[in-house]
Image 1 (cartoon, rainbow, N blue to C red):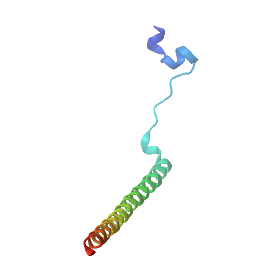
Image 2: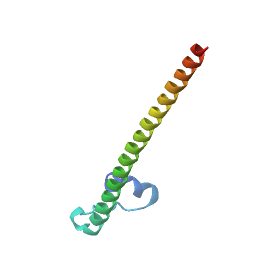
Image 3: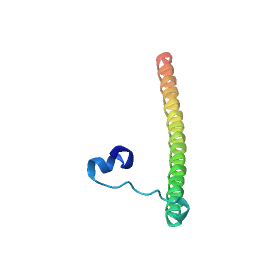
Amino acid sequence: MCSILHSQSYKVHGYKHRMHVDLPLLSPHSKMFDLAESFACKVHKLHVEIIKHIQAINEQYKFEVDLHKYRYARRLFLDTYKT
């Protein structure tokens, strides 16, 4: 009979079961949720911008490396057949 009338927390710790919270009454908390959501959105947008920036830098770096390899190979070829 005791297990039906009391929750597990009452049996173990002696605490009574908490009442349910009415969510529409939490309007100040919803403002905090909106702030958290807008902050998360800003962080996500910043993350996307950083990824795009890193990709652009990597593409530029790859271009420079390929150009250097081409110039080096051309210089080796010309030096080899120059004599």
